[in-house]
Length: 431
Ligand code: UD1
Image (cartoon, rainbow, N blue to C red; front, side, top):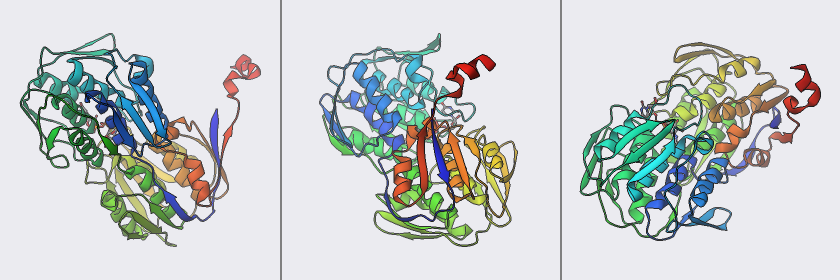
């Protein structure tokens, strides 16, 4: 059982380089299934969600070759249409992308209902609505989502809910469908645009990604590509939050500053300085911050995936802050853990009110999901004393070498492997 041990209080300094975007790469790797030739994907992060995605592809028969640490060659020609069972699907939500891509290539797909972070109710009705509109029959049987179509034909699809996953799945299923598909109320997140750019580099005809309306004209074939994944907006934002919370001055490289604007704007508002360069941002923490209001929104609004980390920063801002989570109905599970560190936060439904305290104090805490784990790291770095963060497998799903990168910035963080107490025969006997 691995945990991070963090002694808080150290000022961060120097530079950190952000890795490729998790949420883009977990769509782009399955998208290569639609290609009739090998594809080379660059700037892939070394995180467990990528390992799992590549493993699934390999088990289905794709030939996977790492060309270097961040570049993978995927030859999907020998890939067979196999079911993706619960053991794999429960590990990450993005296994749903195999639905769109397998349907697009084989006109059928069988994927277990997905897992991923527990953020509350996460239905897939909009994904299914899209597949049906393109001509697929969809049924859920024994926890499996089964899709089958004689042929896929383009259609007009209006999403009732702005969904990243449904937009990505819609694009993948429509890329080789006959005729024109129009997706309205599409998600505009940077990773949706990145997927569309990657598919276009393979010969797809997708326009409008990054706006509310995406038009996809079906093509017969897709060819190989060499494509570099965008930098991770949320990893960059997490380092920005870490610099702010520890009142430090760091340069964060390999970023697209435009993608960071909603985060930058909130940091500026509370009293953090942010300097923007072509592909880097410098964050300079201040001595005193003021509380603010945050409401998570689809892009270009404030990202829900930064809500926990930003709340961690606000725990020590002067006055009250109000954080409204409007995307997911259960994204405050980290609050109990922050309270263990002395934060003063009350939660009522989807709203958290944070009363700033002077200082957090180190404590043993547990990651409840990926971004919750990131928030606890931010809090622990700024806290007085030592924190132990458990269940860091969540963090490793989405952050490459988090503790190594933070140590490079001067943080006092170690990853420790200790025996799981429940596997200890003495403890086992006692419980
Ligand atoms: C993606 C991101 C996740 C991020 C989230 C919101 C990936 C792999 N994950 O998740 O990190 O937190 O976007 O930016 O990219 N919904 C429905 N019906 C559906 C689909 C979604 O009601 O069929 C609802 C969800 O319950 C949620 C909202 O729509 O309330 C947004 O979800 P969605 O954008 O689909 O999130 P994911 O794609 O799962």
